[in-house]
Image (cartoon, rainbow, N blue to C red; front, side):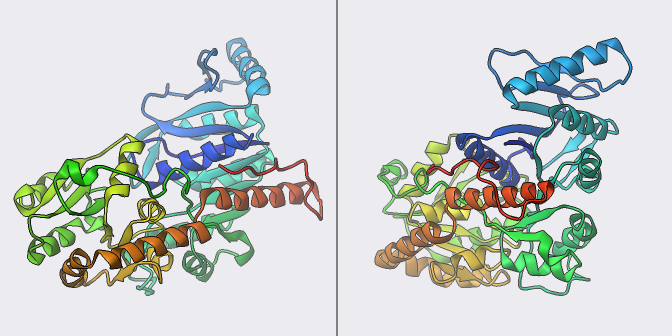
Length: 424
């Protein structure tokens, strides 16, 4: 099966991680995946290049009727028929962790690339871009089934849809999502919200985020030796307003955790400089910045006693799932699907009382390591039960099969549409 995946490669955010992990897992299972992404480096009309190390980039100017364009199109089709694995850059004016602004040519580039590559199915990890709203029309024109993954953050405790800004994206997208064959969300809470906003129930599927539980697993680490501490607490994520790191730092300083405890801040963002100026090593806080090395991040989690995520809004945090999978005791706010993931397997905070509740919890977790150990075990078991990447990718495979069989008018899934699943 050939899947055209629309997702983000930069800047770093949960959408980037989700796209990378899912497409890597699908490739490992033998699928052909062409990756469409927005890029400032694209030519005005975009470019397409094969994943093959021996191939050279092939430009696609999408100008019908010219001999040059025809030659390029033929070259692309020939290349795609061999490998069916390409990178497609869509030109954009701006991209950030929150939204993307494409150029006027991006729709043309996308349409032509899909027409040439002829994938079996199109899957978009939505990047909050105008392209998200026209993609179903493009795919309908080309006769391609199309799936969306929709994961803007929200606070599940606030249900006044008409007044809360965290639900704006859900309101804005509801009518557009109804045009996709299926929209994937990470929790029943999100599904209920979209259905309430008018998306047909049979077009919304719940497939949670997943984590590679073999890679992210408990193990040895010399982290405590490196940071010279007996107890280590970790925050990992962007340093931005919605992440509410300021409340965590305030609670840490008020708790008087002592010189044998460290709070490690892993990540970077717009608030780093302002927050760091008032919370440093004198308070037992170390700022490690963004760490690109995945193995290093795993070593940090394995050496940590407690992971804390104090966000105001979330979808379903992959950082939280990674910490849970490594057997770390987890504390997170009851926002998005994080509270649902952690309920009974960790400590869930009121997002409006983070500083107050952490001021009580931090000394408790410091003084009772056995409690942290039990919570870490429970967190690991929760991941194995519900949030394993291989299990969730299998659910995605089954979804693809149902859509393709529906396109073919089949009542029962055919064994040839989906390759056998293998353990990652």
